[in-house]
Length: 244
Image (cartoon, rainbow, N blue to C red; front, side, top):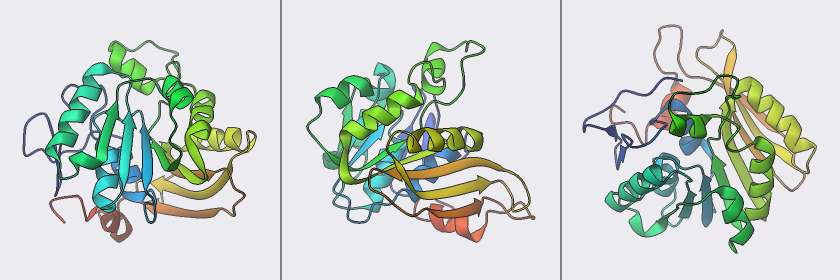
């Protein structure tokens, strides 16, 4: 999905309660991250982990939605981690947001925290063609973090009752869901995303867990036939977007 346009300060994106600077991050604020940050269940969650946090967008959204939630955000790239820390410091929830400049494999091997919720907007492009920007390459290609490694790392950090939520391109999401099912995960939630009601699905919100579950599967169109945001999508983004 394309980068969103709602910039009232240069170099970032202005939300109702916080600003996300992203000029030093490979991946900018976009619809994928907003969807995950607005959708992931936070009721009753005390500790959350954001894997590959980038600018810190999703962690900030989770902190806004739950006034007692503590979020640890793991980010490999030094510049992105530094900018996420600055975004956290400027937000109303600085004391509940913590950035860790480390790869998730190392973090998962040493962390003593078991998280109620883990979120990730993970890499998904296969590295068939090299990217000119190495940081963007790292952020978007599965060569830096395979989905198998991501699932294993999340499993190490997740509490027995916890939920792992991801946003992915639709076909990639189907493959990851199948991979997860073969390695001890159960799908609890799935939302198939389309641009409009009659167009094909292009994104997936996926919630998986380690306890057996019945799948709650729904769909969401972002816009109606008049090219306006649907009521369901507006309900998700209303707490964050200035125009709502």
